[in-house]
Image (cartoon, rainbow, N blue to C red):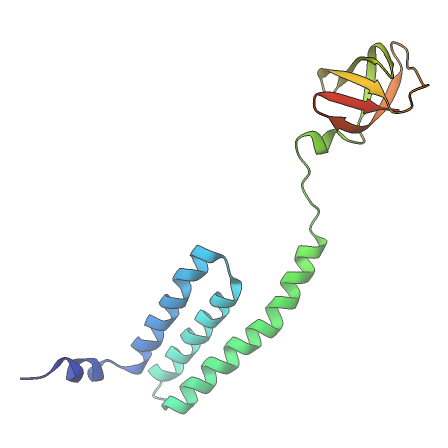
Amino acid sequence: MRSYHDHVNDIDAWVWWLIGAAALGIPLVMTAMPELGMLAVGALAAAGVAGLGAGVVVQVLVFAAVSVALILAVRPLAARHRAQRPQLVSGVEALKGKQAVVLERVDASGGRIKLAGEIWSARSLDGGQAYEVGQEVDVVDIEGATAIVM
C-alpha cells in the first residue's frame, strides 16, 4: 500500500508552481498588494518551464528572475502613474474655488448665495467687505453650512 508521501511525490513540479501561484494570487485580491501578483506571475513562469521538463534549479531561477524583473519594471511605472493621476475632489471640497451669485446681501454677519444650483448661507472673508444682490463671488472655503466668499 502506498503512503501519503508517495502520492505527494507523484505530483509534478509544475502543479506545485500553479498551487503557489494561486496561493499568491488569493492574498493579492484581498490585500491589493501588486507585488504578490508579480510573484504569482513568476510562479506561473516557473510552472511553464517545469512543464517543459526543466530542473528544479532552472525553475527557481526563472521564478526569481521573472518576479524581480516585474517588480523592478512595474513598480516605478505604477508610482509614476499614481503621481500623475488627478485627484477626484468631491463634497464641499469640490465647491471651493467655484463662483456663486449673491441672492441676499453678504457681509461679515451673513447673507445668501446660489452655489452649484443650491442656496447657501454665506459670509464675506473680509469683515469690511459687502457684496450686493446679483454680484458674482468666489467661494474660498466652506465652514459647516456656510460658504466663505470674496
